[in-house]
Image (cartoon, rainbow, N blue to C red; front, side, top):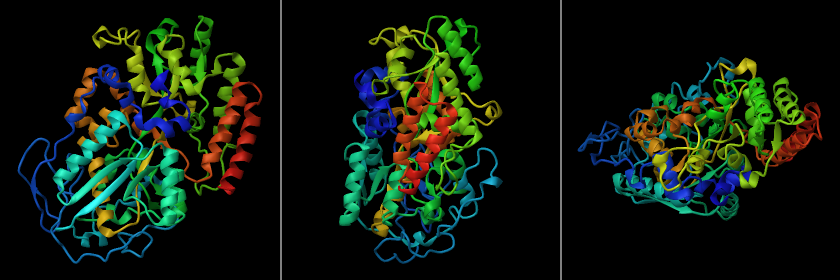
Length: 550
């Protein structure tokens, strides 16, 4: 299936997801109604703010905002006016900081969080944008080079370079240079070597377990004082605007709740469904619960179609456990939680469907589930939200003429849920985050300002349209570009509408091996070699070993 291999197993996602949308070329853009890479939000010229004050804009659409304001809508302009003496050159990571800039020890009390509330937002509720020692860093008249190691290719890389170029133009003295390094394994290996040699980039991308590995050598920057900065930080409004799950993947309990990364590429586990087929089978819409899902798969098989083509992927299992209101790891990241009733319920769904002949293994590497779906042979499949672009391209009646429409009515939604979780749905959230290395105060600040710009409203909307990843802010829906994008094809916002339901996967280094053990048990379940109870015991034992030896 050529480039459709880009979203097979988690290994494939991590190795190849950098080219997820760009590699399908013009057909995908046409199918999704996407704009060209030149449509990036344009920065505007400003005068330098004094003492953290608001910038005076000299242009209008979209309006610029200073680095200290609420949710930024375009290129934030770096304040280069000195508001104090510059800090000495060197790392701020791991050093003693002011109360507003230090990382709190221990864990956050999640029992007091309201549904949908972010742990990170709670942590910074009274300190974000209020001031920290970072306010003393002065970039006036300085030249700062920021190398950013990434895995993006083709259209995605073009969009990232465009974003960096616009940021550079609006921030004289700072030059952010995105550098393609290779796949996620390659970039992780190069970083590990660089840490040992004390030659690391200013910024890079990585998954949670990568971040944990790097910070064991104290190589990363804690972003806490940058978020708290009055001159350069986020505000509480920014933190509530960013989807909770996207924020909470970046706080690390194993490292005293430091914020060791920021949102960069995010996607969800979701269900893509054939609305026409479900209607022909007598159903009014997609399944809300796993019991309904089993009934729909059985009806499809009875009608001569396939049931549930299930990919071997630990993220699918994680998402299913989340959908029953469960966890896959303890809050301290030390033990697995596959011995819970919620985990057993998730595995029981697979056992039941395998025995009934309504769920079956597929060729994950070649995305057989997607092919069965787009060919009209299966009523649904569960996969990444980034699949939208490829499904759209494969769904067209005429690959050269998108105006002729799709083969059938289709859409996407959150995966089915446990009966008690329907009103508070959850699914797996994944994708690499951006990390900043401990270098010099100037490089660290410049890197943070780029990340703040990258996650601003209009820029995150632009990145989402171009790449297929999710925008990180709720306010992205208000972006003119995003409104145009979804008005042309409403299903383009299917993933956005469930982004609030995303829940990050485990962070420990041992989870890399754990994923393989989870996937092996899933395969055995689908092949009827294990019962759900036996699979839960096997996963619990092996994952505990993985975590202990990670």
